[in-house]
Image (cartoon, rainbow, N blue to C red):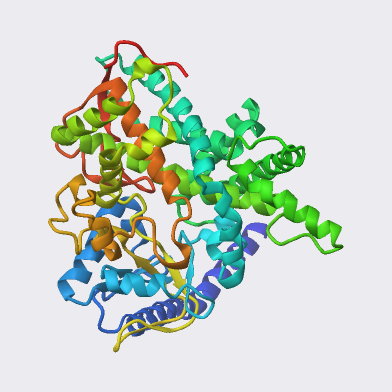
Length: 512
């Protein structure tokens, strides 16, 4: 009887499924048609796919080969003559902006009723709602004003000494690994060096050895999550990244608290947090004396979040630039010779002293090389925004609300400039000054109200690395046909990770 009962229940279930299956199929077809029609309505006459995969859209091709995916969107935008193209990613309608003029229109309209800078298509989940890049108007201006003391000449000179100590220690390690006979990939090595540099410059003495080790693990989880599908579920890379960011911010909040205490005691600043906290503790004290509430953007967790913003901005972008600098210097020996000549005229390893901030400012050709590296291979090729409201981009096209818009700073780098496909540091010389003449096309540091506040620090770091690397090390790239093809990690790097043979160039390695 029990077997008969189970058979009857199975037959009933099959009948039920058979009766509702047409409705399920109908719902699936309805959803597909609704999403398809919505996409086509938003797309209008723009170049882009005519049929999309429900919800996923082009997500899988984008993840499997982002270089090819974004190149295809750029080609559509260029060949159509419109300057922008459309696609669909993870349930979101997107626009790729190739035209520099249209990119400027996006950058100039970052406000609540137009575009919101998002940094990453799903950045709010990763970085948090109160991240600096999501701020507008007066609150954003006030925060940038508080950041100004972090990038004065005095502050930058303090960082210069720190940066060189970290770079030097890592160059020694690289030489021990390679020893002239073993090719090594610089991408991970540069990433690790930059992470230690950022930790030391930004948080100084406030990160213990144990905290740094956990910091490194969490930052790696964050990096993996950036390149993963945004499934915020236990066990998925995106969830691990989001939780890692929370831990990183909490750690940096602790550093902020320690820095405040040290600055209250009147000690000299030794890192970026200290330069920031000097004015912050004074501002808090004045508010307390006047019986006013604690000023905005002065709480430990808030500042910890902003310190993480700095670290994120400095980390992967700098890794990209260092790798491309080595690649481009090796493939342009005339440029390498000029850099070595300039550096040796101002500083030698035998001096036993680090490169001073004043001597760094005199390295005009090395700075031109650094700027050309950033122009030729801008680390973050796009700056994603989301349309908070419908926005009329051209006379004939209005961007729908909710659209994710990708202005391409990479594409702008190859517009306007004479011979843009040529690596030519002399374009930034005093005689040509193409960084001023063609300023609208040099968007590697963004434009408008959200232009990178730490760009001088970034250029200094690239210059110091170039100066030390070419003075202390002889290097040769490992040959491969596709070694300089662009790969997203998530910023762009050479496909081979910049694999090189290294050997010591100077008679005696400096120690400072």
